[in-house]
Length: 98
Image (cartoon, rainbow, N blue to C red; front, side, top):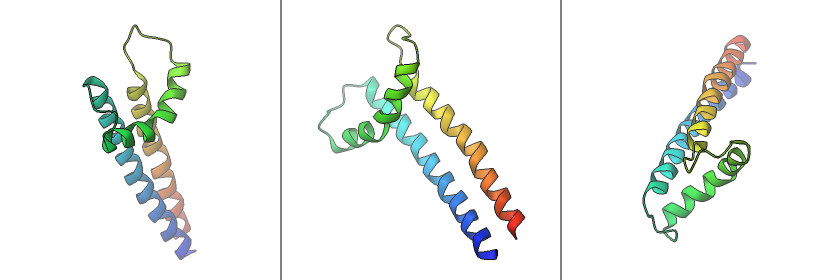
């Protein structure tokens, strides 16, 4: 049980790091949408490839706001919710197993 507890704690820490990094990727994507960034730049392409699948799904559900794209903000809120719910839940399960 001790190994499973440590494994779950490690997964919780890794998940927290990945979700935090994804928030910064979303912010980067929003910033490049404000400027005329080179679409062939590898960093710009990476930011678009990593965020567009999720953002496009949100845009399909979100009504048009007159040219204002609120999908990055909504995605950041969803990631924060996941961080606030999943990470502590995994940590509590791991502590209960000790």
